[in-house]
Length: 278
Length: 296
Ligand SMILES: Nc1ncnc2c1ncn2[C@@H]1O[C@H](COP(=O)(O)OP(=O)(O)OP(=O)(O)O)[C@@H](O)[C@H]1O
Ligand SMILES: [Mg+2]
Image (cartoon, rainbow over all chains, first blue to last red; front, side):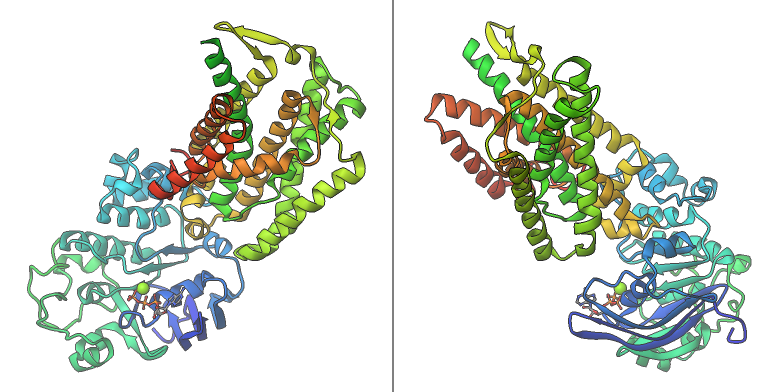
């Protein structure tokens, strides 16, 4: 993917918050199609990276470095304008508006000047249509995640930033979310933060690994996952045989939905693992 | 019986005044996290602008349609001043709480001083249509019409605000912003526009309180806004930051409590009871009656 022009280029990104030097010169690019996954241990700064790209670093925080989307520099631009121009954000912990109904949450997300694609959202998440009048705060975690993704998909995006969409969800819902992201990524490039390696395996074409405030590794996702030793040293997890991180290749029938570099993942899998089901 | 009716209705009149000031204060705090000590100034601006318009604005006057026009002028002045305060003084200082408090306190002091320098510190007689000076007999109690006017106006403002919050795009943005401002921007919405709007709405409502309070008390003086503001703050805290409905309930509770205790106890005991009520609510329900939701 390195020969194509990236949709997003982050260079020497440095973030200090409350005296902590969280990111110390992070550089990576996001391919113009497919899923680029951002990996790293808990607290390494994945969320901080996404938020810095969006201009959401808390006040008092210090951001240095450059972020370019296409040929445009994002530094210093207000968040709402970046989002309006096609940078969609699905935050960690979903952040739906608990006091508003599902319909109101969606209506709020309609961007100015666009025509909201309710068809697309309701086709992916029929549940949201049925539950339109329900308060988002009373939705289950999985339904809230669907709302968080749905409200971003209401609009056309040039790039999606998605932060741990499967966190805390039941296996079946993890599968559903992964399927949706797989379909979405056919049309829009995604920068995904994800801890579930099975989901990573299924979705990601490229991977960037953060460690100690810097990029420790970047390259093709299947290359990273193929090398168990590499994965273990970078992420602190084993690739195969760990029950809490089940792995699988996509089911054969799903090839049409998977990203281009997928399909050659050599790790063996059990067919009933969390993400395989379809 | 007639005493109770009278106390209830005058208590509600007071509550109406509190609500008109507190609703804007509450939305401003809930949405923008701004403790606006200059909010009392909006009330004074409304009162003085109405007073000035009744004497000087062509077409406006102390009675009939002229009075409506004078009040409309006062309300518009409150909205404009609210908006200007947000744009010029608050906007550069978002998330700098200490500076904000200093600026708004300073602004309210300067405003009072300016009013005093221009029109003097003594109360000025306020223009009042004749009918507001009469009383209406309600269940044997002779209730001042100006109090009834206040109650009706506050009820109308409450209904309008709730309708605005529930059925308009900006209302939606405000309700969402009260919950999580940052996420509103992350959906591509310039939430600062909503801040300005909320200041304008709050300024207008407080100005209406100033105008109708002038009618109720019969006079206007530079320090009126400040003393009402203290109780409005108490109402906001009891009702819950950011909740219009909470402000309404809390205003009624505070107004009635004050009126009844001041009548049956010693004068001044009502204020102490209000503070006691505040302490109890803070102990039992620190987020206030209605928490941090703007509609419920
Ligand atoms: N507002 C803040 N104030 C102080 N420290 C912060 C702030 N935000 C983040 N941090 C610190 O920065 C580091 C990186 O946080 P971040 O949320 O980016 O990690 P992460 O990689 O997303 O972790 P996780 O996988 O648990 O979500 C953490 O040590 C965190 O405590
Ligand atoms: Mg995180």
